[in-house]
Amino acid sequence: MSDISVILAENPIILWGGLILGLLIFLTTRYLEQMGEEEYSTPRPSTLDAIVKPRIKEHLDMRGRTAPDTSLKIGRELVGDVDRYVDTKMPSILMNPNPRKDKESELEDLDEDDFTDVRVLKVSSSGIFDKVLDEVLVALTNPSEEEQANNWKFYIFKKDSFLDVPGNDMILDPDVLSYNYAGMEVEIDDATRNVVNAAVSTEVSEKVLAAMPNYTEKVDYLFPIHSQKMTGIEKEGEHLRDNDGF
Image (tube, rainbow, N blue to C red; front, side, top):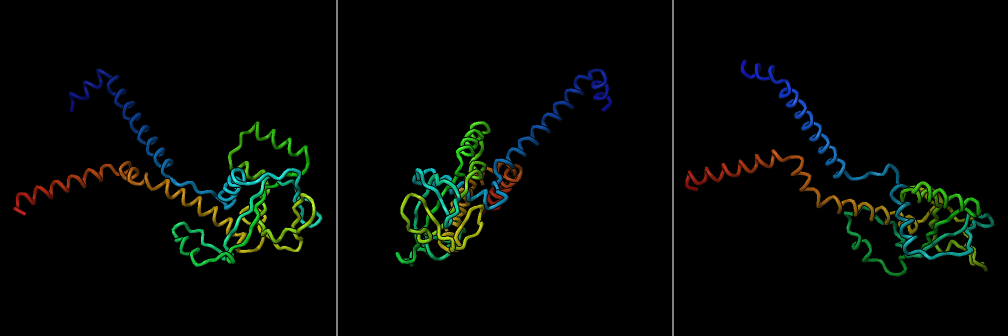
């Protein structure tokens, strides 16, 4: 022990080098652990809007139809200009958004009369100045999908709730009841709520599937010593069986 102390006293660079190396190993280990935790953790949006609105916007951008010179009105009140919309059929019974639940079993007993025509709309403000300002902000800030979705207004109503009137404008019956659901204006009906449930189910299913291939990697990454011990125990068991004649 005294010889080691003498060597370190005469060569302080060895002492400091060892301390610095140990510190670097510790910091590197902590960084890799934190990086692994971030990589394998599942994102959890804080609100339902953060899950649903980007999904609805994505679907409208890909599958929706443009609506040139079309305004959305509730009765005589102007809401805004319709950017895109999509008509779809949704079950009239409220569906469970749980991705583990067998969706096919829920739908197999339904016939055509059990589905309702639903219209989903993406609406912008009607003023030209506001539209130009929105475009400039998007170009300057490069917002995320969630932030872009927050710049739009979304409406989910049954097609029967739109009045049949001449012209391009889409006019909602002012007597139809709606409420704010997932940051959107949604008619009070099971079919319209199913649009939200479908978006939630798709998002959660993707997160579950994305996490599954990484599970064994995460175990091996976080518990290498445990894996080594289990291997050693298996070898000891094989050795004992060989010696005992089993």
